[in-house]
Image 1 (tube, rainbow, N blue to C red):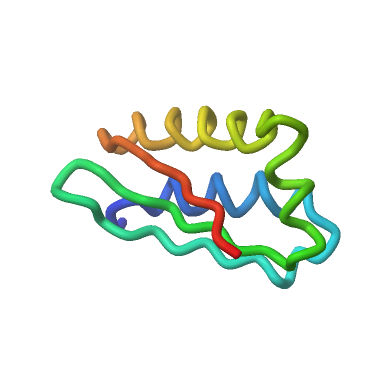
Image 2 (spheres, rainbow, N blue to C red; image 1 turned 45 degrees about the vertical axis):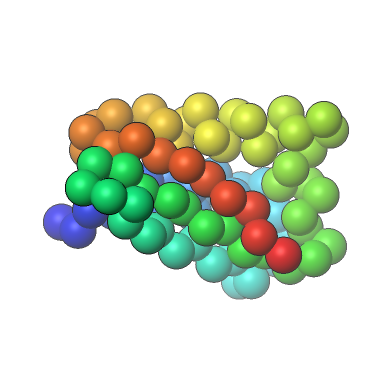
Length: 83
């Protein structure tokens, strides 16, 4: 199992349940040191608002869930939502 694999699966699943165009989702997990990863999330422009949510509430929830997934692997997780 590669570093951040659980994080990638969790983030991909959660985001795919939120968006209309699940085929446009891209989640890249990049190592950020030996015990940290950055999950870069890209969606269709029309879905980005749904992923971020009002006042960033959905984005914050995604970050919380991905942090819990990172705990399973002993990793600190940061989630970036990219255009």
